[in-house]
Image (tube, helix red, strand yellow):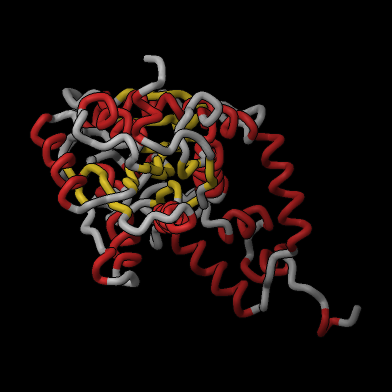
Length: 350
């Protein structure tokens, strides 16, 4: 190979920069162990020399680092408020499996609102936590602004509930899920499907539930357009009455909603006709064999793997704190066949 076609290596850059090739490697990976000014100087020099990483070497290094991490004490914590206990427990095993596969220990950390965010940060850091999967910390409808010491951790959120700072997030794809539900409705002859959800659930999808549904309605004939209904809490009698009135006045033939809402309506709203069709929007893949409802199936295993993969990427590249360009990683949903009429739910043994 002649000089003009020789690939520029880390050693070449190190010799030009007057540092070790290890320093160059860490600098190009953005390691906080290297001073910011040194990282910038080495990156500029690498660009000038036309350096591009060898993908085969990169893959081998990642494999080697994974073997090393299996011997490390790096830990990941799933952090959430007390009101999210059941939601987080659904993911607990998937998070642990995904984390262990990459060499991390994983624990669930309950956020106590009586303790300051600074104190929580210090506790997590003292436990050797490097990455945080962050769930909702409060039951407020307001966007949350937790004052965690972000620079100590790599962080990814479950949904979009944090207003500041902007962080990476993972979840299912509400646009694709709503579209699938509406397509299934049409295939079954439904013409007036209505979306019933809570303000909090829609809020945590960054308004994607409402947006996807309303976009679809704009493509329908005027007589088939239905406004969605978002209530505060369906278990509240006032909200339950509002939902019943909405179903009746909108002349719905299908309701798109969440499992617990559909089951609550069937049990506590006798005025809702048995022939009303429904599609659940939140059947979890890990529990689909236990769930008799039909509907959109969220892959909690994949969501957990995505969350851990995002954290692993940040940790291995030394990217702690608030990302420069936050991203959403959304997994497409599947479908589960099952019960699809209110009357079918009412005859199920309790």
